[in-house]
Length: 333
Ligand SMILES: NC(=O)c1ccc[n+]([C@@H]2O[C@H](COP(=O)([O-])OP(=O)(O)OC[C@H]3O[C@@H](n4cnc5c(N)ncnc54)[C@H](OP(=O)(O)O)[C@@H]3O)[C@@H](O)[C@H]2O)c1
Image 1 (cartoon, helix red, strand yellow):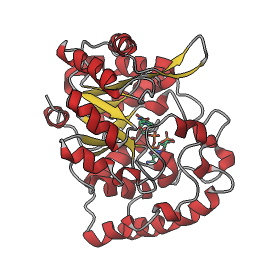
Image 2 (cartoon, helix red, strand yellow):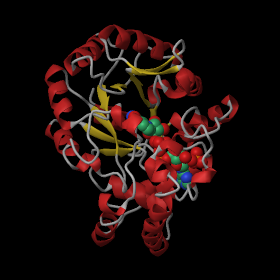
Image 3 (cartoon, helix red, strand yellow):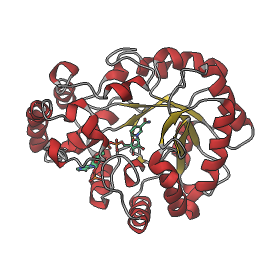
Image 4 (cartoon, protein in one colour):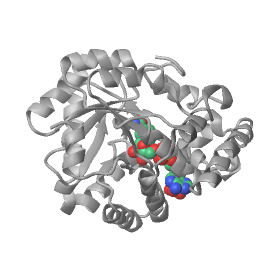
């Protein structure tokens, strides 16, 4: 079953829920009881597509998602990722796309997520030591065995996607895509459209920036990954916040929030663009889901497209270390 038919089957809104920051990434973590409550509320308010990964919270995120959604398994689209995980012995993140690792991680994901199959399983990062055909071949065997319904790739170039799909159909590519990160427009979205591959837009709120959640570098705690991201640095953030004012002005005119505008703009890029905002706040979940109902006219969409373009944003999205992990050049294939 294709990714799109599964979304239809579970009556999913276009917007999915990124579960990462319940256990990973942006500063202090959420207690399990609070995370369970948030995930249950998300389901109650209508979210049906839930995105997690082996990496997040060193497997804690999959556990909490599994616990919260076990009784609702057939009513949701459950997506997770392999190929990048915390190594408990090394105490650091390791990219490993070898077939035996993919199989082992899939079996562990299924157990933590309390299910016998994943609707979508992504290769979280291309392992430069392993040809993409081998990693995708391993994922394809998991599809044949019924453990995975569809395969995704994350942060890959158009070239890698084209090579991968010779081996097996690729249902979705997950990449950072938002008003201030237009990189997929260079080549990746076209490559997705050639073969009915969905574009799942991660960090659609610019890691909180587009929702106005980050106003000073000093508000980010030591363990917040955004501290190492150039756009959030003390040198670049003030410039970027001045650019955000233009988005605020349009939000005031439309009587919506800047985050809702950012999500509505993404949805307007095509039926195949699926944003997965992440939040720990039930109020923010509700606000983000409501962006689904916004209908922006062509002139407003055009004005939004002209904001926060690469030439107006200060700083690249990743630190050098994170950039080295991905398969694409900044602003290029
Ligand atoms: N494939 C990959 O390599 C990759 C990388 C990154 C993320 N992802 C996926 O994409 C998902 C979303 O990405 P993300 O969490 O990085 O970015 P995001 O959705 O762009 O931003 C999340 C941040 O925005 C804040 N926020 C969310 N809604 C808000 C609202 N309505 N008002 C104000 N602040 C709001 C959140 O804080 P609060 O909690 O306070 O709301 C959080 O700090 C993740 O959960 C994960 O599943 C994938």
